[in-house]
Length: 57
Image 1 (cartoon, rainbow, N blue to C red):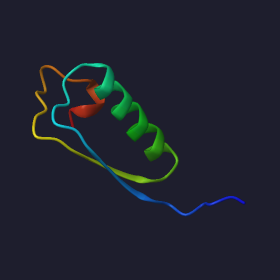
Image 2: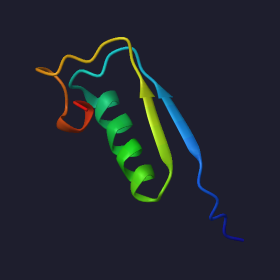
Image 3: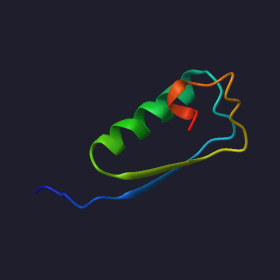
């Protein structure tokens, strides 16, 4: 059975700097968005000079 219902998905992560866990979150968020889901990432810190390109907006 296929579930085509679009989901709203939230990720919580304390710091979106450059690291392995951060890369996994960004990759998951981008992949889910490409499938039509709405994705939001909440973080207490994201330095635009020290983060992945996808996390800058």
